[in-house]
Image (tube, rainbow, N blue to C red; front, side, top):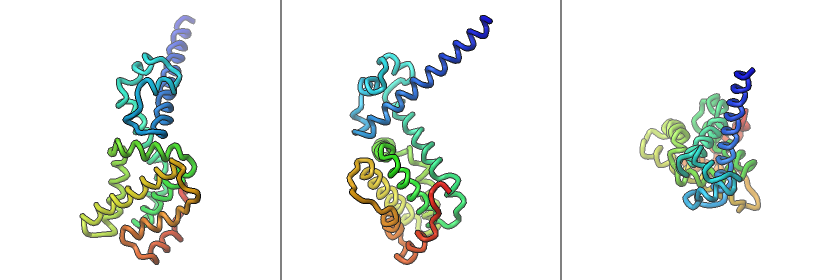
Length: 207
């Protein structure tokens, strides 16, 4: 019986640590959505999370470590958005459009997520490395010129981050996802007719 109690006590301790860590990450998300990541302090985080300052350092060595945990969650959310729908598509332009639509739909349904992505990517660009790599591969299939593909990565990412920032800050009275995706496709070299064809064949995100 004593062994059972010790095991259960250890389980409760682990559950509490997981819950407290999640509280701190959630608090960071709230704060990062509202202001520049570098302006947030440990005091801000513990106040938002409702825990003692010592508790913060039980789970994270620094604010940078907490920001890395937030970035890790974002990367996981990116993968969840794009898989398996994107891999089922074989046409590069369609994959690019699908990725843009998935991010826009997620942002429209979760403006805080949009704001955090925009701010975290600005201060922690490597959090989007996998997305950039996949995007570059698709763009290289659209253009045989390497410099053009690399430039187009910056164009797509730049437009998308700007749109996420705008959505996160609730600065638009109306929003047309198709118009944004069409503009992106045109910017990377597709004609208006080609962009329209891609949009007509674009499956819904999550399929």
